[in-house]
Length: 92
Length: 450
Image 1 (cartoon, each protein chain N blue to C red):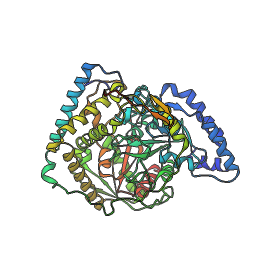
Image 2 (image 1 turned 60 degrees about the vertical axis):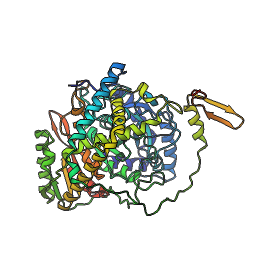
Image 3 (image 1 turned 90 degrees about the vertical axis):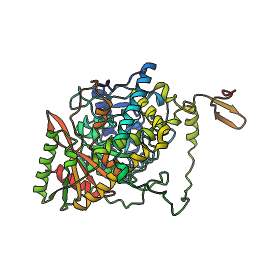
Image 4 (image 1 turned 45 degrees about the vertical axis):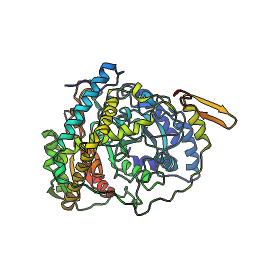
């Protein structure tokens, strides 16, 4: 019957249940679509007439990087400016 | 007061933009607690209104002059928290405006706040928000529908003039139906998605919610059109949707939709359609949509995969928190489901098969629109449930069985309030071929005027 759909923190046990349920739903949905295999032939790739589109230059908003850096969990400053710091050295 | 009349009053200086905005801010203070439609009310709304009043005095006014607009929390508004109703982005301040926001501001609309929604638009009930569910203003025990739950509830409770939502499988039309307001899913490619935090990029569209058809048409006029930032937008000519015409129409209904729907709801809609046909001298025809029974299955496979892909950027490094660490159950179900499909896709059993079903449904509509100018169905196949009741994922997904086909076919659709069952509003869905929004609005206006 399932559970309610209210937001809640998920326990590790519930994570496993959700994984199993998602897999079951996708398998049943995939199976329900079996009949389309006979009705639609494979289609090839779509060829674009032009490979690139024209880009127009937009003015950069000076506030963008200010807010962007404010959103970052960690930043670092050097002589070239301020940078987003993401896992420096975490792979070592 | 109709929106058309209000705009006249503002434009002629009889009602100031400031007074209009302050009226809604007062109403939000008074009513919001019982509904939970807003996540964040804008602190700049009054200041913006004062600026617009100055423009009015100079005689320069845009289409949306002085109107208070609520924005779904997955559309970027510069300087506002664009949280997607998730802990993942609960501290994310948007550094830029989505194209639709820029267009609203260019036409002198005022952003009054960011509204609640299902977390990352994953839901059809408004219950999955990490900021607590939105309640249906018509009956606060019931779900308002989703995922644009706050947008529909804010319009229904008169906490704003207009709202924007996003619709991937029915997320504008479904809550519009349950809350008794108008909701539009534009043709895929009519409205720019630049600045929309995506659920499923091949299906998402931003659209308006309004108290009346005029308001929805006016908002679509403002936001529609080609955008360099979104290559999926078309160079389609945008007519003035607010100039409603009396057209002679062939109106189609399909038993293939009837099979998916509560009988009482379907009968109410059919009764109303026949009344509209009689009054407007429209012809009623039966149409076939053979593959719509596969829409839910195809949609959720596409949606799970595209959502999984789109959430890979939420790793907590540049902004926000890692999504898997802080999201709720429905979001996680879709992420792990999408990941499973991606792993198993080499057999072509899921995504590729869903794309084939999408093609068949598109072809069904192409054929049906040769017989009918518009196709009408109920918007939602059942009445809304009580907030917090147990419901299976498949049952929840079934709420969108009648709206998903329009997303898969890429066509336009509108939901308008049509009847009440047990005092609960029931919406009528009017679908028209791609880029025939004008025809869709003409039909909706004629039915609204019955």
